[in-house]
Length: 281
Image (cartoon, rainbow, N blue to C red; front, side, top):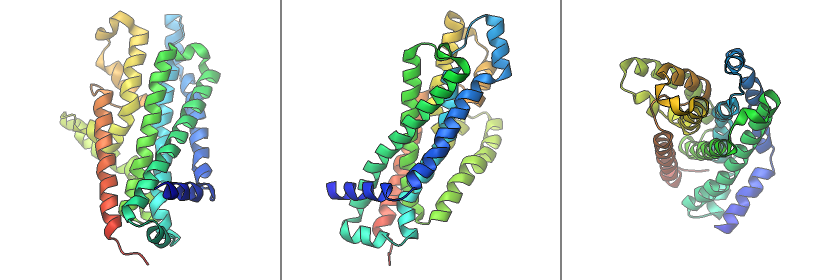
């Protein structure tokens, strides 16, 4: 397994894909962190309260939920990219059994997902510092909590991408499927489910993934601002902040985490089973 892990590391760093997809993560994270603190209604609310709000907690969540798609695409190309360039045959022949190859990819891409997550949190925080200053993050413990959730979210999205790439085994199909589902299909499905009032929409993959950070950042933000009055904060306020930061009102962050971990495990298992049986040339 050690040799397979080293081989995966060499594959990643001998091509430019890893930093090519990391660049938009850095740019989006910094932009979300900076511009998110400049929302007009936030500035008006700060003027009314006479205090700086920890808006940086929400912008870290927002930047994470914008950036995870790039981690997922990077992971998806881990396997589907090898089918595209025909190197998968050599990988399977030298790394028999096939399951060990996917296992090595999951190990290495866990570390790469962590790298993407660190870049996201750091640059989102830098953007927040530019826009709101140090006071814009409130209690340092809150920042570490939200940041840690951001790292975990990025790692899980990367691993989901690896499993999905193994499941589809086609780079174009993997990329298009992930992008269309992330930005179109689930949005349409959620629009129908929200009206049903069942709360099922919170357990869809993208909603669950965004809830890992959003369902943690929003309650922490409300608690920091409202303090003892938190139980009396209207649900509409929570819903507005969730629209901004991701997640959904009334769904705890750990439920989103467990749900998304289930999706990741199921897709990775499906990719592992299919990769063992799929013909290669």
